[in-house]
Length: 293
Image (cartoon, rainbow, N blue to C red; front, side, top):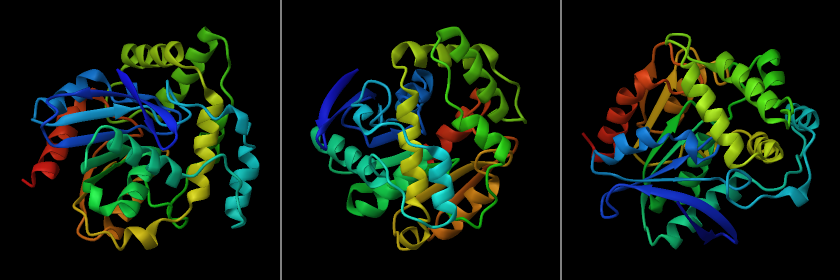
């Protein structure tokens, strides 16, 4: 792994595959670090003649933190969003998209295929709208357009997701294990060992729950992206699960309908995660999208 100065901050990143191959930039979701895109998954993509870049978003992993901005009150943030009032945030999704542009510049990459999951999908969308000439293709996984008319996350799931996690390692692991299991793809066997390994690795690498809240506030404040997305003329692939409890399947369908000529891949039984049983399907779809097959 390495780091680069980008958009005035430090971004931690890692590259898989031959640098001369088409570039694929992977964006993690809310609070997740680059290890969300597991090494084996990245290697599967790289074996298809791609140069795969995973990185830590600002306020996550080993990239720059924004602790001086404090911790947002998410109840107030969500209430302000419902009432369509201004939301104060430490930074915006546009800032996070600009981080990616800065990283590409630091790596001397002119254009890349931009792929994001969950909040990462929203950042990917913002990047494509801000930097269309630098976006070879857009891949949005288990994300949304921010359309307030789509079915929304249940209050119970929302409360669980935004609940402040405990600081003590073992308690933290159990707390996040319960969240992982509740969001798991109901159509696939639960991968307990994999879940625990990911949570333990994330805690030991960089414990920063306050960063996740600041990222979440930026996501909520970004609002409805449909107006800009409807103007895109970029090859787009939308991947979504039919059993997603965080962004219901209607969010994926709406994304594909909003972006002109977007392809839609619905995966039966997939929740708000990526079980290893569907990795090959997702990798094949991404490779076909990038290579125009």
